[in-house]
Length: 356
Image (spheres, rainbow, N blue to C red):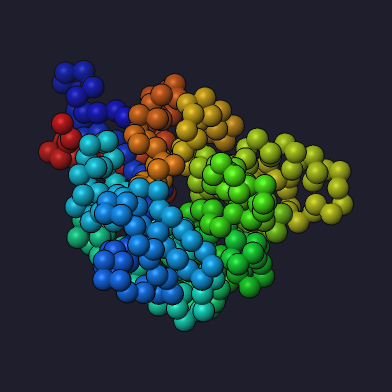
């Protein structure tokens, strides 16, 4: 990240490039309060855990264990952590296990309003530190469109959605109004795995996350491309987290299938040609992997992502990008310049507000 004090003496400066983390999650404070009071929270209850242990959310037959006690932290603590690791702005979205798609529509819609209002409150109180992405009741697409309108009018920057809705892929015809409205409003759309569908083979060694999450992301890309969504809404600003999962390494195989199989014909162009139409975050856990991602799709299509505060996230996402050996311009683009342009926020922080 190019700082003001890296310029030669006498060079005019206006600050340094911001670090903008587009992949940071929220465990709502309303859920924290419900857990502390032993109350239900929008269709969920909380498992009793030892003091200081991460929260565990029970929703129907699903048990979702959060990866770190920091999930409960108030925004003030989050800001202090951001300062320690050199992140200027977090684009906050709710934790994917809390998307609520498997609950009745009225519960999902009420939860979305409460969560989005909390994120909006963070953005309004700390406008220099937080942007927000709305969660939607995708099990009720009409209500989801209404919530997009409400959340965007309130100042959020887009939406965060799962890779499937109760097993329905993202090209499901019922979801088309959601994508069309998101495209019309210029929403940033963060696609995040939720409840991987890999089956029994992924039940050991945390493979449901380690393998299942990237697989879900890859399936979501295939659905949006081969289902024609990205052709119908070409301006949709979709970002795939975790470095895009297996998308870039599988693009050639998808292209081959598109060329030789009559039953792979849902897109107007070969799937690999859509890599430059979408976005990816930087969370590869591997400098070589991030270097390969930027080489494949271009540094101008990659955004900083940490997955904070998950234990599977990057403890220092800025350092992780720096370690990838990119050029200075490429590094700055990934760390913040791309996101600033995409989200319509200043790319540089004033000298007077410079971090030490």
